[in-house]
Amino acid sequence: MLSWPHTDINVHSLVRTKTKVEAERVGKYMIRPLLALERFSFLEPEGKVGYRHGENDADQETMDYLKFIARVTSHIPDNGQVMVRYYGLYANSHRGKIKKAGLTASPLRIVENHLRRFPPKD
Image (tube, rainbow, N blue to C red; front, top):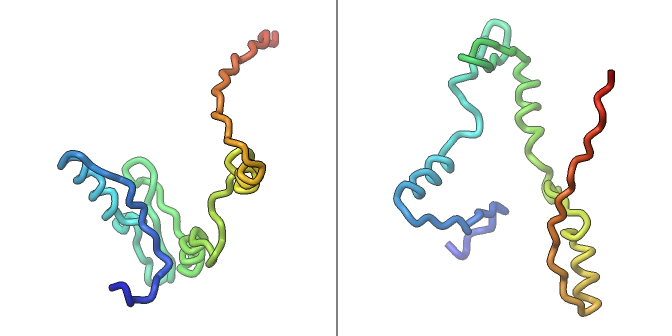
């Protein structure tokens, strides 16, 4: 297995379960499909894809099959594209500056903002 080429797929393996119920819950989440296939239908004469949604699958949206493929694949990032960006104290540049200066990062404080009440408009 170590000689296999890397597929660039990473698995988050920090989830640890303590009971059988927790392990089953995580397992059910992992095998859950990305799309609910029972909500899709292929309308062959028109060459369109139908998707049922809403309460009791009452609403149906139809689209061209090429548009459907484009909508599904638009969520797949390009190779090397960053999907999560960190700003402020969590940004790599800030952490690098702190490390370079030889300082220790100060713990973050939680500041509770009290909402200001505005008088009602009459």
